[in-house]
Length: 260
Image 1 (cartoon, rainbow, N blue to C red):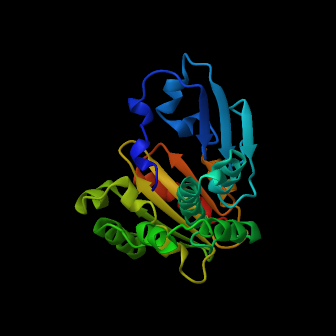
Image 2: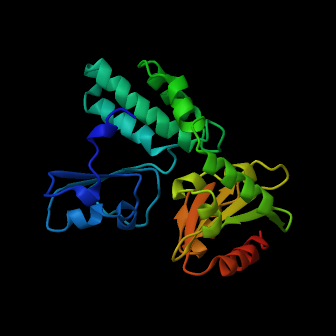
Image 3: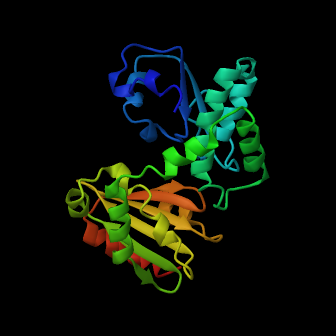
């Protein structure tokens, strides 16, 4: 993405800043090492997000839970900051914002896709972005390991009641294919695509916990389910973490999904 070469990881950043903008991060836990960098500084803090949070954790907040993507909000802010005066810069910003929008809406297939999303996409495209390039980079440049993990998740999936499908990936699966955490990020997609089921859940074993992802194809509020396990997210897409082994996690989540 344009501007990627200028990114400095929070873990490598030294010193203080004048302004600290948290994007798509509704709480301090989501900003990782950056939370440490805030200590000892007194900058202007800003949140731009489409995740509803019970408490504000910055001085200024532009939060809209109805927005299809946080990048739609970034797009609006960028225009107010005068980015449109520089066509090249505007195209670069549009490329990044469009990438976030097309990802968050599942290529404009998820329930959060609305008129505003399509209108903004058209506006971004009009800035001269390479839509085909974005699609190729995001959806047609997968690693072999990620495809093989998809196959494992589909082979292992099992129905829970008549409404949900559950599957999981283990550390052994990851090791077998030399996969990274990123390779398993979208393994829930083929499970979600199965006809006749309205909720999909994928559990991913980590060294010290199990990460769970939930997706809904109807109006089922999977964020409410995630909150029962200490997680959260959107109504149609949410996540949680369980401090236990994969076998216990499968058992606990299966019991909850059976009550849908």
